[in-house]
Image 1: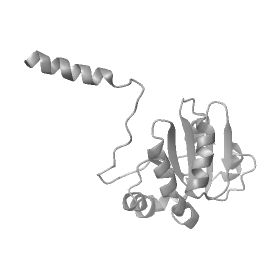
Image 2: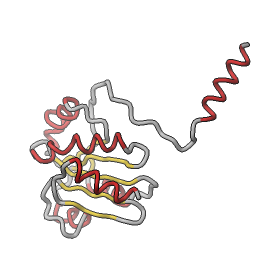
Image 3: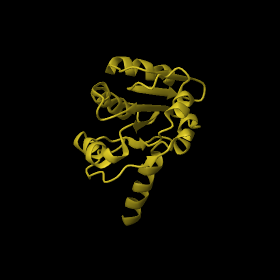
Length: 169
């Protein structure tokens, strides 16, 4: 009987699709730090070679449209958990990382990756993200292996999902 139980457990786990991922579990702990990086460390994220659609959202805690649209990104990242990777790139001042960014992330229970981009050479790195970007936020880069589009705008949930699904098909 004991062996039957082990075989049953083995059978259940072997039936699960190998490429299937489970959605991110809701974080039930306090986020104590986020990475602070310069553009040289960030730049590889602009050309990530992955089978998933990459969604990079530039935001700041002081940007009302950014804060308003963040739940839409979170919801779609959860809905399409095995098809997209979402990263929030905070453009807050480094001295506000703990008092504003971490507090915001914990208060809103942000589940996806957040990094703080600390690089004063905006004249250098903004055109590398997109040559037409004025530097205004919110701004979002969505790409996959064959397509890349930059959006210098705030999204409604419907608009964002419409844009993301263009990359999934």
